[in-house]
Image (cartoon, rainbow, N blue to C red):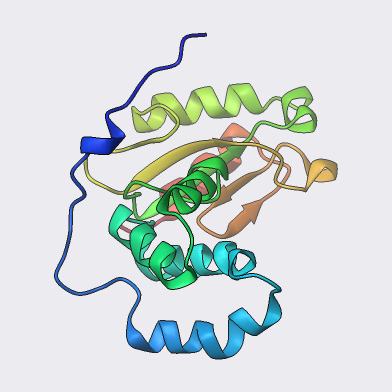
Length: 175
């Protein structure tokens, strides 16, 4: 597999005037979060979770702000955010549909479910529908192997899935 080189040194970061890490957020992190960890790096993942929860994703400007706040390299923030599938570094749809592809879900037929959802939504994993309603993800283990196959729709776990059951869930979601 070849490495694809990206021009990261010259990449332009889209910016907005107001910061993603507000004074209130920084004050809260300083008072409640940082004291829990020996080093500021320990607070990185909880802060990433909070920023994503507030915005639906983690913009690069927010990553720079997090790095400055924690006194770490922006590359460390990007490395962490891009390593874990639970973090989104691009905008997502209103509904994020994550199909588990662990070994238990594989044995129980996750591929047929994933293929059906790909066809139904007209997108591939890590893509968002043109209307912004759905983002499809193929996730690693969701920790519910005894009820495989499973999927997350936003934060709701759906267990013992069939194509029909997942269709019913998706069809009930409001626009």
